[in-house]
Image (cartoon, rainbow, N blue to C red; front, top):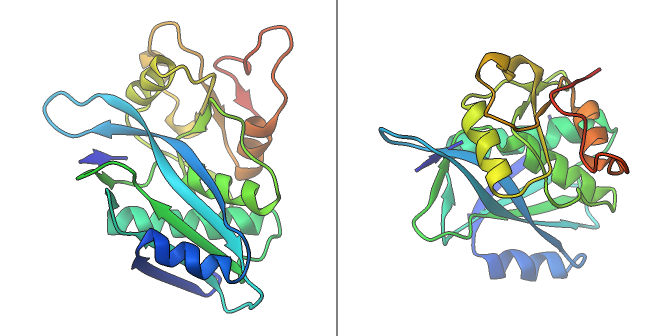
Length: 222
């Protein structure tokens, strides 16, 4: 195991069923989104895995429709709830209506369960970017939740997650300001803290620094 409002319809179904439904309305957009997790057990380690996200819009406005797809892996009920909240809350920050959105999510790893809410900000911001016709650049990632007032909520195991991100070659790691423990930073890693959804999105979408090639290390974005 990995730990890690609008009208809302949460369903479980097959990938093919979701795509068939979405194609009847609009061609779905698809991304494999990197997320930071930590394994359970006596010696937990950080992991970077991918979650498949499909996004389409419908002609109706009957509410946000999220399909948590069956197999190969799964998202726990707690994780599903956190993701749904993050999508709605992040959209609200940007003044976007979710009433015509259909979203499919799946874990492309057999017998793999994600438990926890720290991936929810990354998924929520990815969906917002897809709705805006944008895409978060590769090699950038955030670990955090989205609070009801549009802030990035705290998460645990930040040192393990940051270490895993840099081992995987990710260039930018954002974490909640409330979770940045400067006394336990992994050696020679660069991590930036953010406080709000808007700050996080601006940081993730910012052009690369032409001099350093990376985001400012260990900085609070205010």
